[in-house]
Figure 1 (cartoon, rainbow, N blue to C red):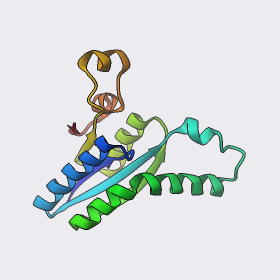
Figure 2 (figure 1 turned 90 degrees about the vertical axis):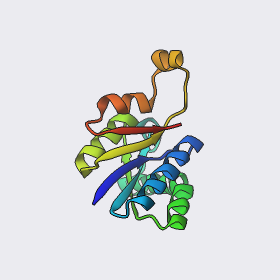
Figure 3 (figure 1 turned 180 degrees about the horizontal axis):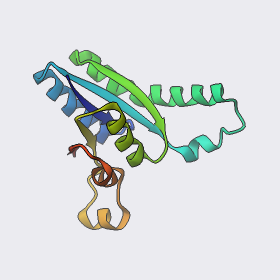
Length: 140
């Protein structure tokens, strides 16, 4: 079975990547998709006064909200998937998850920045390409 990681932040670009991965998985029935939501640690820092269980509940609610449309898309297409939540720098967590889970590739959206903006600002997609040890497909 081939496993493909699909990071999802709920954006239109991420959902296009989910659709692309779903179409690929439908053509290759032995493909399993892994949806990954990476929680921003800065956002979670505001909840440090809460218990670990309360923080976990907040992360799960965030992930549920963000992944809802992707989940519906995959279910309507009949594509098997698993969901995962991580907290940290998005590109690092995406690359780590792909490595730890034995994913063969990553399919993710990109904001479609101009080449100059990408050089000056960078992006999660750009950093993921540099950090990843597996092929990364960027969907615009």
